[in-house]
Length: 318
Image (cartoon, rainbow, N blue to C red):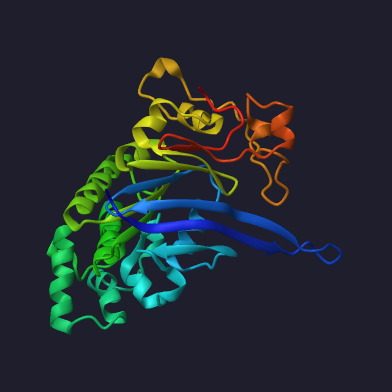
């Protein structure tokens, strides 16, 4: 049985927004009571529409944001008791856009080796050896180490970002939309690289994505987020075969297929996403849900465990 490497326990993140000169401040729940565990060596996918809170949750795990309340534990230890430098050595991100996340004035060698310099790891010669070794691991030729990001392709830049994240051999890597800024022809190469690296380096991934094709290919378990909450969580194969929450069903029906006769997918959710500052009463999904009843409008659904699956819905799919 795998040990739980990361535990997220009832995390909230509430922002107070100014209402203007004559109005009081209003609260926005970006993350609304999220709990889950990530086993060592596993891959958890966080999916949902833009604004659902998945990137905010990632920032909290990385220490870039502080939760309003709740606790995160790393190997059973409260993460607040771990210094930021130590946390950075154990948890690293791979950001969405390699065009924006790399310093254009630094060489590839400087970018990948920066974490080693910041943390004072090894001599200059030892750092150079580590950088060259990591470049080989991610499939970058040694000759580009003195190039600048602008001289590399999009796929090569993302390999640089991956090498920078892995140079200190972290335990957990948070991949925030790791392929969305890349050409389709390059996406599969990066996904296969991430799969190989997880196996070779014994990594644990948290993958944030709105692309369910990426999720199905890469992750072992999926957590579906809606307005700051996890509304369904299940092993990937089970969730794709038989979703329990109507929102999950809508997301899956929106995936493009290679069959031209099927036309463009339709979620039937409409184009209006609920206002997170003024969320709907009861089940927050009810204004967009084809199964909603009067009960859904007034009563908040509670998490229900069905085997190794979790769902928050009064009328989950049977």
